[in-house]
Length: 240
Image 1 (cartoon, one colour):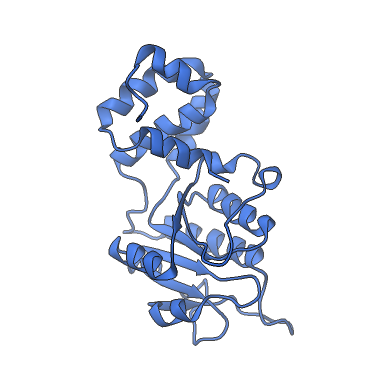
Image 2: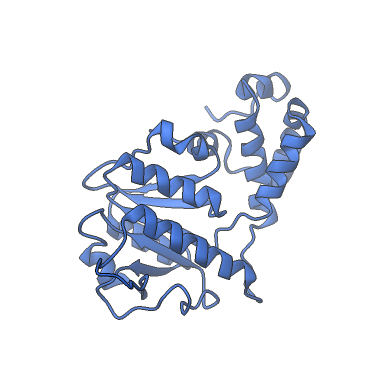
Protein backbone atom coordinates (compact mmCIF):
# COMPACT_ATOMS: atom_id res chain seq x y z
CA UNK A 1 0.00 0.00 0.00
CA UNK A 2 1.46 3.37 -1.06
CA UNK A 3 0.22 6.11 1.24
CA UNK A 4 -1.50 9.14 -0.24
CA UNK A 5 0.87 11.39 1.71
CA UNK A 6 3.90 9.68 0.16
CA UNK A 7 2.46 9.98 -3.33
CA UNK A 8 1.90 13.72 -2.93
CA UNK A 9 5.35 14.17 -1.41
CA UNK A 10 6.89 12.44 -4.43
CA UNK A 11 4.90 14.54 -6.91
CA UNK A 12 5.11 17.93 -5.20
CA UNK A 13 8.00 17.89 -2.72
CA UNK A 14 11.08 20.09 -2.69
CA UNK A 15 9.76 23.55 -3.60
CA UNK A 16 10.14 26.90 -1.86
CA UNK A 17 7.52 28.56 0.34
CA UNK A 18 6.25 30.91 -2.36
CA UNK A 19 5.62 27.99 -4.72
CA UNK A 20 3.47 26.30 -2.08
CA UNK A 21 1.78 29.54 -1.02
CA UNK A 22 0.52 30.35 -4.52
CA UNK A 23 -0.84 26.87 -5.13
CA UNK A 24 -2.35 26.51 -1.68
CA UNK A 25 -4.18 29.81 -2.08
CA UNK A 26 -5.60 28.67 -5.42
CA UNK A 27 -6.55 25.14 -4.30
CA UNK A 28 -8.10 26.33 -1.03
CA UNK A 29 -10.82 27.95 -3.14
CA UNK A 30 -12.16 24.45 -3.76
CA UNK A 31 -12.54 23.71 -0.02
CA UNK A 32 -14.91 25.12 2.58
CA UNK A 33 -13.67 27.61 5.15
CA UNK A 34 -14.43 25.06 7.85
CA UNK A 35 -12.20 22.49 6.17
CA UNK A 36 -9.32 24.94 5.89
CA UNK A 37 -9.69 25.83 9.57
CA UNK A 38 -9.44 22.13 10.51
CA UNK A 39 -6.31 21.68 8.40
CA UNK A 40 -4.60 24.76 9.83
CA UNK A 41 -5.56 23.91 13.41
CA UNK A 42 -4.23 20.37 13.01
CA UNK A 43 -1.04 21.59 11.37
CA UNK A 44 -0.31 23.86 14.35
CA UNK A 45 -0.02 20.74 16.55
CA UNK A 46 2.16 18.70 14.20
CA UNK A 47 5.68 17.69 15.22
CA UNK A 48 8.83 16.04 13.92
CA UNK A 49 10.61 16.40 17.27
CA UNK A 50 9.25 12.95 18.09
CA UNK A 51 9.08 10.19 15.50
CA UNK A 52 8.39 6.45 15.30
CA UNK A 53 10.28 3.47 13.84
CA UNK A 54 8.64 0.06 13.56
CA UNK A 55 10.44 -3.15 12.62
CA UNK A 56 8.69 -5.82 10.56
CA UNK A 57 5.11 -5.20 11.70
CA UNK A 58 3.31 -8.25 10.34
CA UNK A 59 -0.35 -7.77 11.21
CA UNK A 60 -2.19 -5.19 9.09
CA UNK A 61 -4.30 -4.16 12.09
CA UNK A 62 -1.16 -3.21 14.04
CA UNK A 63 0.28 -1.34 11.07
CA UNK A 64 -3.02 0.51 10.73
CA UNK A 65 -3.09 1.32 14.42
CA UNK A 66 0.41 2.80 14.31
CA UNK A 67 -0.57 5.14 11.47
CA UNK A 68 -3.74 6.15 13.32
CA UNK A 69 -1.86 6.75 16.59
CA UNK A 70 0.67 9.00 14.85
CA UNK A 71 -2.11 11.00 13.20
CA UNK A 72 -4.19 11.26 16.35
CA UNK A 73 -1.34 12.58 18.48
CA UNK A 74 0.29 14.84 15.89
CA UNK A 75 3.40 12.82 14.96
CA UNK A 76 4.11 13.56 11.32
CA UNK A 77 6.64 10.85 10.43
CA UNK A 78 6.51 7.08 10.73
CA UNK A 79 9.56 5.03 9.70
CA UNK A 80 9.45 1.33 8.85
CA UNK A 81 11.90 -1.54 8.38
CA UNK A 82 10.46 -4.32 6.21
CA UNK A 83 13.18 -6.96 5.85
CA UNK A 84 10.86 -9.82 6.85
CA UNK A 85 7.40 -8.51 5.94
CA UNK A 86 5.71 -5.49 4.40
CA UNK A 87 4.26 -2.70 6.47
CA UNK A 88 0.80 -2.91 4.97
CA UNK A 89 -2.02 -1.04 6.78
CA UNK A 90 -5.56 -2.22 6.11
CA UNK A 91 -7.46 0.49 4.24
CA UNK A 92 -10.63 -0.28 6.19
CA UNK A 93 -8.86 0.22 9.52
CA UNK A 94 -6.49 3.06 8.67
CA UNK A 95 -9.55 5.02 7.43
CA UNK A 96 -7.71 7.65 5.42
CA UNK A 97 -5.19 8.67 8.09
CA UNK A 98 -2.41 7.83 5.62
CA UNK A 99 -3.32 11.13 3.92
CA UNK A 100 -1.81 13.04 6.82
CA UNK A 101 1.21 10.97 7.96
CA UNK A 102 4.49 10.58 6.04
CA UNK A 103 5.73 6.97 5.94
CA UNK A 104 9.43 6.43 5.20
CA UNK A 105 10.40 2.87 4.32
CA UNK A 106 13.97 1.70 5.00
CA UNK A 107 15.69 -1.29 3.41
CA UNK A 108 17.31 -2.39 6.66
CA UNK A 109 17.53 -1.62 10.36
CA UNK A 110 21.12 -0.45 9.80
CA UNK A 111 19.95 2.08 7.22
CA UNK A 112 17.10 3.29 9.43
CA UNK A 113 19.36 3.80 12.45
CA UNK A 114 21.93 5.69 10.38
CA UNK A 115 19.29 7.93 8.80
CA UNK A 116 17.58 8.74 12.10
CA UNK A 117 20.79 9.34 14.05
CA UNK A 118 22.07 11.43 11.15
CA UNK A 119 18.95 13.57 11.47
CA UNK A 120 19.68 14.12 15.16
CA UNK A 121 17.29 11.62 16.76
CA UNK A 122 17.95 9.61 19.91
CA UNK A 123 17.11 5.95 19.32
CA UNK A 124 14.79 4.84 22.13
CA UNK A 125 14.09 1.11 22.19
CA UNK A 126 10.77 0.12 23.75
CA UNK A 127 11.51 -3.06 25.69
CA UNK A 128 10.80 -4.59 29.10
CA UNK A 129 14.13 -6.47 29.05
CA UNK A 130 16.60 -3.68 29.85
CA UNK A 131 17.06 -1.25 32.72
CA UNK A 132 14.67 1.38 31.44
CA UNK A 133 13.09 4.70 32.05
CA UNK A 134 9.30 4.99 32.11
CA UNK A 135 6.96 7.35 30.24
CA UNK A 136 6.96 9.55 33.36
CA UNK A 137 10.76 9.65 33.86
CA UNK A 138 11.92 9.79 30.21
CA UNK A 139 13.71 13.09 29.47
CA UNK A 140 11.71 14.53 26.57
CA UNK A 141 13.73 17.77 26.55
CA UNK A 142 17.20 16.26 26.05
CA UNK A 143 16.97 16.01 22.22
CA UNK A 144 14.55 14.86 19.49
CA UNK A 145 13.77 11.17 19.85
CA UNK A 146 12.59 8.15 17.89
CA UNK A 147 10.54 5.46 19.63
CA UNK A 148 11.29 2.02 18.18
CA UNK A 149 8.67 -0.74 18.26
CA UNK A 150 9.57 -4.32 17.37
CA UNK A 151 7.73 -7.34 16.06
CA UNK A 152 4.55 -8.59 17.64
CA UNK A 153 6.27 -11.57 19.31
CA UNK A 154 10.02 -10.96 19.51
CA UNK A 155 10.05 -7.22 20.25
CA UNK A 156 12.84 -4.96 18.99
CA UNK A 157 15.81 -6.60 17.28
CA UNK A 158 19.23 -7.15 18.84
CA UNK A 159 20.57 -4.54 16.43
CA UNK A 160 18.20 -1.93 17.86
CA UNK A 161 19.11 -2.97 21.42
CA UNK A 162 22.81 -2.49 20.65
CA UNK A 163 22.33 0.81 18.82
CA UNK A 164 19.80 2.34 21.23
CA UNK A 165 20.71 5.46 23.15
CA UNK A 166 18.03 4.76 25.75
CA UNK A 167 15.43 2.17 26.72
CA UNK A 168 11.79 2.73 27.62
CA UNK A 169 9.21 0.48 29.22
CA UNK A 170 5.64 0.66 30.52
CA UNK A 171 5.61 -0.66 34.10
CA UNK A 172 3.24 -3.59 34.62
CA UNK A 173 1.25 -4.25 37.80
CA UNK A 174 -0.16 -7.61 36.75
CA UNK A 175 1.38 -10.92 35.71
CA UNK A 176 1.70 -10.09 32.01
CA UNK A 177 5.17 -8.96 30.95
CA UNK A 178 4.17 -6.51 28.25
CA UNK A 179 1.33 -5.15 26.11
CA UNK A 180 0.86 -5.75 22.41
CA UNK A 181 2.42 -3.36 19.88
CA UNK A 182 -0.73 -1.35 19.27
CA UNK A 183 -1.55 -0.80 22.94
CA UNK A 184 2.06 0.04 23.87
CA UNK A 185 2.34 2.50 21.00
CA UNK A 186 -0.92 4.24 21.91
CA UNK A 187 0.14 4.75 25.52
CA UNK A 188 3.68 5.90 24.78
CA UNK A 189 2.88 8.15 21.83
CA UNK A 190 0.09 9.85 23.77
CA UNK A 191 2.02 10.33 27.01
CA UNK A 192 5.28 11.49 25.46
CA UNK A 193 3.67 13.77 22.89
CA UNK A 194 1.70 15.44 25.68
CA UNK A 195 4.77 15.84 27.88
CA UNK A 196 6.75 17.19 24.92
CA UNK A 197 4.19 19.91 24.23
CA UNK A 198 3.91 20.88 27.90
CA UNK A 199 7.66 21.08 28.57
CA UNK A 200 9.13 24.57 28.32
CA UNK A 201 12.10 25.09 26.06
CA UNK A 202 11.29 22.40 23.49
CA UNK A 203 10.92 23.66 19.92
CA UNK A 204 8.60 20.85 18.86
CA UNK A 205 6.60 22.61 16.13
CA UNK A 206 7.30 22.45 12.41
CA UNK A 207 9.31 25.11 10.59
CA UNK A 208 7.60 27.64 8.31
CA UNK A 209 8.94 25.73 5.30
CA UNK A 210 7.55 22.43 6.57
CA UNK A 211 4.20 24.05 7.35
CA UNK A 212 3.96 25.46 3.83
CA UNK A 213 4.61 22.14 2.16
CA UNK A 214 2.34 20.14 4.46
CA UNK A 215 -0.58 22.55 4.19
CA UNK A 216 -0.35 22.38 0.40
CA UNK A 217 -0.27 18.58 0.42
CA UNK A 218 -3.18 18.40 2.85
CA UNK A 219 -5.24 20.75 0.70
CA UNK A 220 -4.46 18.53 -2.29
CA UNK A 221 -5.57 15.48 -0.28
CA UNK A 222 -8.84 17.21 0.60
CA UNK A 223 -9.90 18.41 -2.86
CA UNK A 224 -11.54 16.05 -5.31
CA UNK A 225 -9.61 15.55 -8.57
CA UNK A 226 -6.93 17.88 -7.18
CA UNK A 227 -4.13 17.04 -9.63
CA UNK A 228 -6.25 17.93 -12.64
CA UNK A 229 -7.57 21.13 -11.04
CA UNK A 230 -4.05 22.27 -10.15
CA UNK A 231 -2.72 21.59 -13.64
CA UNK A 232 -5.31 23.87 -15.20
CA UNK A 233 -3.82 26.84 -13.36
CA UNK A 234 -0.22 25.64 -12.87
CA UNK A 235 0.48 23.19 -15.71
CA UNK A 236 4.08 22.41 -14.72
CA UNK A 237 3.45 21.60 -11.08
CA UNK A 238 3.63 17.79 -11.15
CA UNK A 239 7.09 16.19 -11.29
CA UNK A 240 7.32 13.97 -14.34
